[in-house]
Image (cartoon, rainbow, N blue to C red):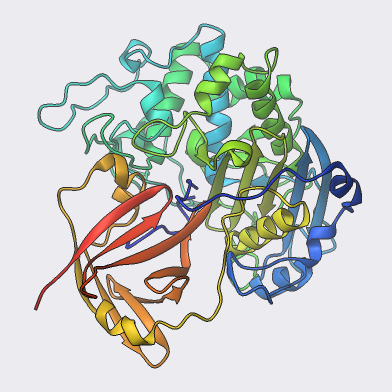
Length: 505
């Protein structure tokens, strides 16, 4: 894939200026609950787009959504919108149960760090110390580095298996060991070390299955039981559970819907997610709000759910990526946030917490287009509460026709680039060659056969409006010299940069 697919990624930081100040006390007092619901807009926008939440849910076929807004370390509002099942009178509320995809990883990481705090685990010791049912495979030639929990939680251990397929309600589910081995009925490849440990940022849901194995083997208890005891109960997350397949009679649960808004995974109404640590959490907007608040509070002061030094560790990126042990990190100063998105086929979710202000956001949806809706909700909330660090791009007419002919051509990815500078683009932007073309409609990029529109933001810099970079945008900057020739371009996004040299003809 040429760049990030929404099913998988989900967030990182962008190396664009981050502006804005904390809202004044008067501005905070003037805010009205629900004011965001008429402010939805895209991330790349002209300033004219304004939609209501109801309009965008209807357009995207998203049956239901629950949203919790956090302010100053407290729940500001928690609301439900739409229904649990299209065509039925079953309203969504802030305690309705949703599958949250890869947001599960943040909860799994919080559990892991709690066990570190209690002395059951260690972030930096060889995980072979605890594993009993599975052995870590050998690394690439010449790499004998021990694998640690810190590597696995930050996606720097070098493992494959980005994510997992949803499983139909009547299909067999694999055991943990079958998933690790890629053995039937598992649908994934076997877990393998494909990069030298600690050298690359490669998102791996498979790595979180290893974390699950470590926790279960260290405690001698199922992962779900460990989460109930050490995470959900202390935080009051009463509806939450790591559950491969909640029972058909589970009350107040959001059903799955496809991109047309039609119920799927029938007759039960939701798929199975046996990969618990990476994608098997079922939870509510209220419960996720409790998790976000607890992690932020632990970071800002001692005496929280996690020891403060461990929370600071969690909220510090592990090079060369933008993940700490668990969440993605983005922004600077007063705009510093931790966040993560989640995407199973029919459920999309997003969480965010500001490490300085205690503000934050939880979005859970039960529609296949819920990721697009979530972006627009996040933009609306940011606008409504004047959050610092908005990563949106507001475009305006910019005259590039006189120079854009020089941008046209083939560009090949440079092979000798720093993995530190590339960051998540190293493995997230997988096109080795891209084409730039120009037509009457403007400048286009063709990567792996897919054509994407480029919108100018300066004379030589363009944003890709329909490419997903978590907590940012994907941009291309054409490197135009004093002789007016273009010899290379730079791809920018997610805190990383990649250089492409123009193929000379």
